[in-house]
Amino acid sequence: MKVLLVEDDVMIGENVQIALDGDGIAVDWVKDGAAAETALAAYAYDALLLDLGLPQKDGIDVLRGLRAKGSSIPVLVVTARDTLEQRVQGLNTGADDYLVKPFDLEELIARLHALVRRARGGGDPHYRKGDVAINPATRQVLVADRQVVLSSREWAILDTLVARPGAIFSRAQLEERLYGWSGEVESNAVEVYIHGLRKKLGQQFIINVRGLGYMVEKL
Image (cartoon, rainbow, N blue to C red; front, side, top):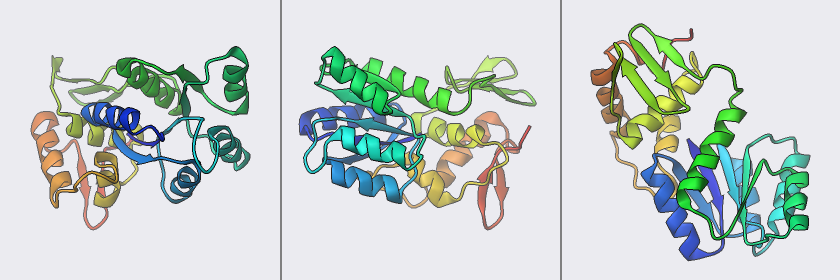
């Protein structure tokens, strides 16, 4: 999963970035509304974490412009604006959820995962192939009914692949799911994590499409 964090408070932004990175979520962080619009126009994100009181352009205006363009990206508003009127305005403008500062980081992450699950279409979230069963909602991975433990980066790649079975992801696209702008990209990181996943799930579970990238089989 990759998210855009729009937050002008450096201390809050750093703490959120660290927490999300620890959960295997890649984060791009900008500190004003104008930069948020630039990033949203240039890159694809699974979700948007949006403060409202921003320099350059208010978060409500960013949200309004985003929805006017037809974007359906899940938006979690994270703000100090806590009156009923302000919450209603945020939701009516197009926010999918609303979290008031100060907040618990575990709740933020849980809400974020819930938004992305809903955006992916509901229904049975499980991916099953042979002896492998994956539940993205709980991040439980079973092989022959035995639970397999994945690192946060292994999960980030696996989650990306099983969210769109049959779709081929290039190395660059998978790197985007592993690192935010501030992350140092290791030259062979994707190959290392793919190798680790194959050892745990089976050599044929992740398919290498020569010259294009990686995929899991469409069911």
